[in-house]
Each structure stands twice: as C-alpha cells, then as structure tokens.
Length: 150
Image 1 (tube, rainbow, N blue to C red):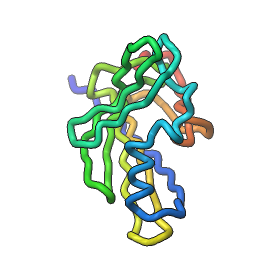
Image 2: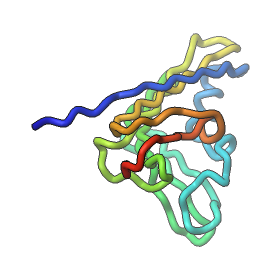
Image 3: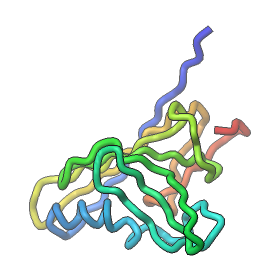
C-alpha cells in the first residue's frame, strides 16, 4: 500500500525599494535584522542568527549560552537572484528530522532595478491540513487542523 502526501504551495510577495544585491544580502546574510528575535526554539535567549552563504550551508540560531539550533539548510544559493532554503521546523515549533516532512522556502528576486521583488514560496509536504495565517515568521504562521504530529 502506498501513502500519498499532498503538496501545498503558499506564495507571498513583497516589493523592496533597494538594489537587487542589497535586498538579497539582507534576506540571506542579514536574516537577524528582520526575523523576529522571539521566534526561535532555543532554550536560551537568542544571541544571533547565522546564515552560511553557500549551497549546503545552514541557517541556525545561536543562544547567549553558546547553544545552537540548526533549523534550515541552504539548498540553492545563486546571488543575487535566487535562494532556496529548507524549513526544518514542524507546525508545533519543533525540529523536524524527517526530510520528507520538511518544507522549502524559495526567494527568487525580480528584475535588477531600484525596485526589486522578492517572492517566497513555502511548499508543505507533511500531508496534514495546514494553512498559512498572518503573523510572523515570514509574514505567516502555520495553523494545522487535526492532531497528527508532523
């Protein structure tokens, strides 16, 4: 018997009045400047968010006590036009170790001009009924129906 998992895409766009290189840099390496500091799953207080700018790199939080929480991987890194990052956090704000249950966030940039467009696409592959609702992070939070632990 084969179980099929539904794939859902959620897309959100923002317009950034900055050169494409600057917008890309702030979205990636400057993640700590725009990500809400209270949205982390460390036990300790957040000291820094780190983005390793390369394919195969990680995005992780570092606590004031030196602890680290690796919650994303950089799957594609093509500055300044495209980055794809895994989302390895479940809707219950726990690390998701099963790659089949993780999601991806893709941020392709718009035309290279003083007005650039960044689009985020979250692909949810966990098979539960999840929907994006307004609020942080990334302009939304996951709300899931049912009690399935994903």
